[in-house]
Length: 586
Ligand SMILES: Cc1cc2nc3c(=O)[nH]c(=O)nc-3n(C[C@H](O)[C@H](O)[C@H](O)COP(=O)(O)OP(=O)(O)OC[C@H]3O[C@@H](n4cnc5c(N)ncnc54)[C@H](O)[C@@H]3O)c2cc1C
Image (tube, rainbow, N blue to C red; front, side, top):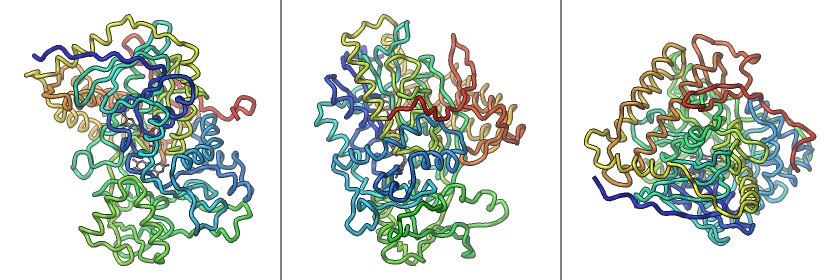
């Protein structure tokens, strides 16, 4: 037994849960109003989240470039909807992202990030390349210090940042308002009890549902501390969570050092091609856009959709595969190395390659290996929000990768939805100035749960439980799924849920135990949603049911929502929103 855990009460008008890209933007915007703003972050906002060590590219509708070329906001929405999301996207929210993306880039520029380059021939001196869309919309920039700068800007505006707090519970009133949230300090083991009038939840993606392919714990593209806590908290609070079935299959990338070099269109373009062991080209290299001639709208090939099925090729005895930059000019290779340095984990990767492997892109090819499965790329799972990012709980907003129904909106999605959610949360908090007392047992229950884990002799170490859950997901809900296998997985997972107790020796382990509880809840959502989607949906969703091999748009061109009601999970289908011309913001 340990001494009773200390509970720290904190009042704040606006609480941001998760200080990643979206959370920091939300805090900065909310702090413009006359409200107190606090970020509760599990790691440290200076380097946390998917953008923690930088992003090198961000797509946007860039008026100085696109107006000149004849592209409209609607063209980019159409290109993203058709070319990237296969129609499976909330167009109302996509409209917000596309129309606000350039404004947010100008904000990032004001926060000290460099987007303009003297050698660029593109309008605005931007470095613009083709990645996602039929028009070149991706800005390459000096994004390595993104989180450092955002943290500085948030602090400058009086935002209180509390790092190393793992948020685990939302507190709501009986009439469906947000009243607060609870978290546990991962260093000090204290319980943080926030009372608030508006919350933005932005805890990012869901990692650790599946084993890392390299066998090294934590060697995954998505940060290890993103364990779907936001989805789990919202689910327990009675909110619908959508599209959880789209846990990806493994993809090919730089396998033994999982980072984000792309497919290979983003960070390593234009010189990168993918070749097989015989040197035959599987994905050809691209070219820099011809900015001497930008004044016309024209179709150029977008990167996605051109990705070969490497696993199918491997089944035919093909491979190994290599990322091949050897045909690149000095200028192109210099450009790519600069991009890699600004991309997530890229600096470390480049230093490792150069200093330890003595690797040279001019002469060496980089082997292209499978990456771990993740709930990320499509990023279409998450919370249901309205066009102002508000959830079904009044005063609870969601932003960034936490929002469902938005495949591949990535950093532009995070900065735009974060900003808007922050603004809306501040407005909500200004309307409700006093803090309501929370008359429920959740704070005490959390204290008991945590105390119960300390030195629980019969309890399991969090890692044992995590491996058991990952085994279930990988064995029963792998690349191809089927009803009987999924139902067996649900049985086995519920055994774990009912019977396992955790043992923690210190606050750090306590945090890990709470994360694994979250992983279990997310795994349950993945399995149940996989049973419910009785069809197959190909890339970029990669959802294959052996017992329902065809796509069934008639019944399943919808977001599948699961909601907890009186201890039972209910499913319903949410129609995919098209743009309502009369009802969009400006
Ligand atoms: C390696 C990598 C490189 C990428 N590069 C690009 C790129 O170049 N361009 C691009 O457009 N996109 C890129 N992306 C995607 C992009 O970074 C994300 O879409 C974006 O960061 C999402 O922002 P977010 O705020 O929703 O989540 P994140 O930025 O991931 O932030 C989530 C935050 O929540 C915190 N958190 C989680 N759980 C809790 C909890 N329980 N309590 C408190 N805090 C919590 C996390 O620590 C984290 O700080 C990349 C992704 C990866 C993984």
